Image 1 (spheres, rainbow, N blue to C red):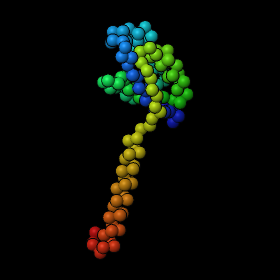
Image 2: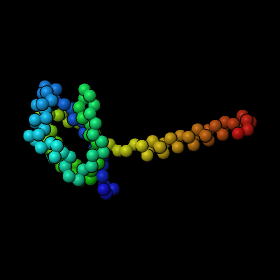
Image 3: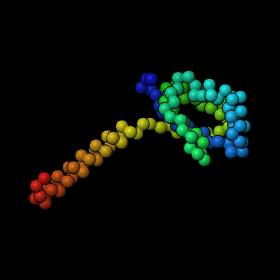
Image 4: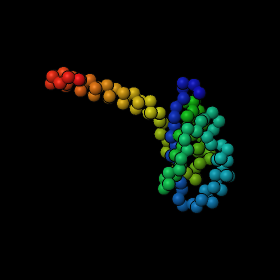
Length: 120
């Protein structure tokens, strides 16, 4: 995918006024399993959070964001309440911040040792 992609986390909260068979029937009627996510979107993760619903993270071109919204309106409403969170992969950032922290702590330790006359 191009560099103009984004991650979108979608929380699909179950409508607890309906049982599983009712929910599945509505999803089938709406073409959910073949229509979401729309073409051009990659499923990064899709998990069930018991008591909450489903949490889906998609990677998609920014230009497809409106289509994701339309497909959720078309296929998920009446089954799920939806929340959306633009997200990004924090793992490489965390790794960089950890390295920078380690370097600062190492520098501080060396400076403290040199001020106290303790050999390093």
